[in-house]
Structures are given as C-alpha cells and as structure tokens.
Image (cartoon, rainbow over all chains, first blue to last red; front, side):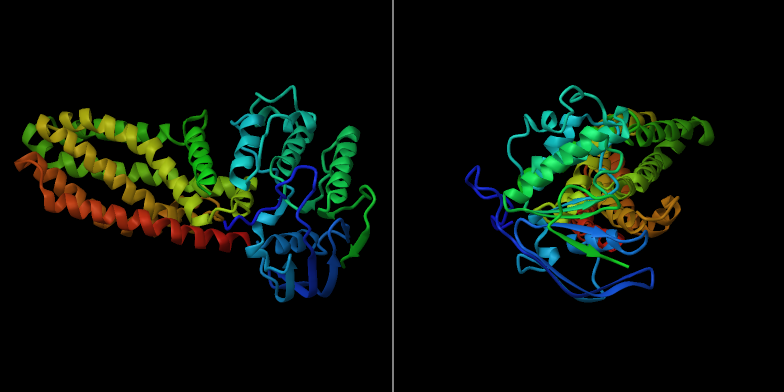
Amino acid sequence: MTGYSGATDQPGEGYRRVQLAISDLALDRGGWRLFEHLSFTAPAGAHVALTGPNGAGKTSLLRAIAGFLRPAAGTIAVDGRAPEDAAPLLHFLGHRDGLKATLDARAHVRFWADVLGGGAVEDVLARVGLGRVTDLPARTLSAGQSRRLALARLIAAPRPLWLLDEPAAALDTAGKALLNTLIDAHCAGGGIVVAAVHEPLGAPTQTVQLG
Amino acid sequence: MIRAVLAVFRRDLALAWAAGGGAAAPLGFFVGATALVPLTAGPDPQTLAVIGPPLLWLTAALAALMVLERLFQADLEDGSLDQLLLSPAPLELLVAAKGAALWVAIGGPLALVAMPMALAMQTPPHAAPLAALGLLVGLAAFIGAGLFGAALAAGVRRGGVLIAILVLPFFAPPIIFGAAAASRAAAEGLSTDAFSFLCATALFFAALGPIGAAAALRQHLS
C-alpha cells in the first residue's frame, strides 16, 4: 500500500532482494502439533525444496509463510516483516488453482495483474503455453492447462517470494520443463522459491525435510 | 489499490450475470413470489394496497438471502480468497467491492421490476418510483448485513440456514423503516423521516458489514 511492491522499477534488474528467515517455528493443525523447532534461512536467489511424507505439514508451512495460518510458536520473517505485512512480496500457489469456471484465461490474468499489482499481461499466456486458448472459459481447460493458467499468475505480477505447493501436479513433461525454466529464471533474478515437492523439481539450493 | 478494488467489482459483476451466476435466481423469486400474492389474498384492491408494500419488502429480503450462501463459499473453495488476501489492497475494501457488485447486479434489476409489481399491488402511480427507490436502498442494507453472515458461514456446507439465522435479525431495521416509508408514500407521498432512517440503516450496514466480513474470512483461512 505504501509503494511496497515486489518488483524493482528497472526492467532486467530482477526482483527486490528479500530474505526468508524462519526460527524455532511450531505449527498446529486441528489440535495436533505438526512440527516444532523448525529453523532455516533462505537468502535471495534460493530455491528451497520442502520434502516430507503426507501430513508432515508442508502445505501448512507454506500457508503460514503466506500469513494465512498463525504459528503456534516461533517466528517467520519475510524481508524482516511478519507475513501479514509482507503479502505484496509473495505468491502463493496452492493445490486449488483459484479459477472461475465461466471466465476465460485472459480475464483471469488481467484480474490477477490488477489485484496483485502487475504490469502488461499481453504475452503472459503465450509464455505458459496457453496462447491458443486465451478466450476459452476456465471450465473447458484440462487440469494441466488450469495449472499452467495458475502459473501465469507468477509472471503476471512480479513478486520476489514464490510459495509453491506441489506445483508440478497435473503438468505434462513440457509443463514441468516450463515450471523449471520459470523457477530458474526467478532465482537467477534474485527471487526465492519455496516448493513443497514429492518428486525432485529442478535444482534446489537447499532442502528442508519435515516429519 | 483502486485498481484492485475495481477489478474485484468488475469480476463479481461479470460472474453474477454469467451462466450459472447467482443474479437471475433472486430476481425470478421476487417476481414469482409477489405475482402469487393477489392469488392468495384475493384481488380486492383495498386489501392489496394494505399488504402490498410490506410483502414487496419481505420478498426482497428473502431474495437477498438467496444469493448470500455462495458469495464467499465459492471463493474459499476455489482458492480465490487466498489471492484476495495477497493483494496490496485491504481485504475490507475488496469485500466491500464484492458487496457493491452484488448490489448493482441484483439491486438494480430488482428495483426496476419492483415498479410494475408495486403498481400491480395497487400502489398509486406517483408512489411506485419511491417504492422502487426504497427497495434499492434497502437492498444495500440487506447486502451489507448479509456480507457478515455470509463470511461467517462460508466454511459451512449448506450454510444458507445458518446465514438466515445470523442475518435476519439485522434485516429488521431496514424492513421496519422501508415498509413504513413505502406504506406512507402510497398514502401521503414522500415521508422524509422514514426514508431518512432507511438510508441511515443502509449506510450503517454497508459501512460495517465489510469490516466484520473481512475479519470472519481471515479466520476461515487459518
């Protein structure tokens, strides 16, 4: 709100350099302690792979970093701020793609650019391989295409911290390659990626094991 | 920030009138239910003139209730709510934009069809526009109060009943002043005191509803 946005003004300069710091974190879910004493730091450019069995708390950790879930103990700092104050710095890509069945792909991208604060949206759909279905309503897209449309959000509004929950789910081989390209480019530009994964994705710079 | 608020307003307006959107159902209910009144109460003009304005208000209130259940539930289920929270604009304003879109989507058409319905209820022609205007203002109050109830019940399956229980008590002030303004308009022309109170309750609920709704929605996510 106070001009505090994710992207730097100069094109080509990459993202605002931020740091993600988690210290002595504990999370509860439905009265259960998911994990405790979790600490790690991700500097600008880091690609963190979040691994662990089902129910270990990967999604909850991502939601806590996004500010949707309050920690039971410990602190999360995005660029030195509490998650609730750091919303304009981060993207959250959950297992629900956030699509409206009756709206077309282009309307979704424009909406995200407006709501999340992004620039031109012309080539975004082409970059995620949806250039031929820009006018189709979301209900006609396949699961993989829906996921690609959700990925378009990451490009439509540049933000330094990406929180990805099973981002490769439903994606085909080309889609996974595209995802890797996006992640590599993001990290090379100084952004941070924290991705909950079951199968290795790209080349993470660090791995956090839960459970 | 303005850009985000306008985007939410435009999107909800488009969704309300898209295929499967919620705007047509309350309108159909309003017209259908009020059209049945002469069949149940008989065609006597004097009876209709007495019960007409209150029944228009009652059906409008119930019509507003119909759209509330899916208002936030859909966003919660498909993940859209997460994105609204990540906007640089405060959630309160985005919720207010959703409410405003709903008001335009169903309030405008409902006020328009309310005029012929009021005439059918033996409202004098000079009072019919006033009756429609009152309903338009009253719907702002219904939707403002309804936002809060809809947000509280967003995570509940078949939450419509819960919303009705939560929200109907708050419908009392606009209904009281609105029906009074409509009845008096039919009898003696514009009654500024009843109408002013109606506008005051509408402003009150339209201002406080989004704040309460945003607080309730934040709880659902955790």
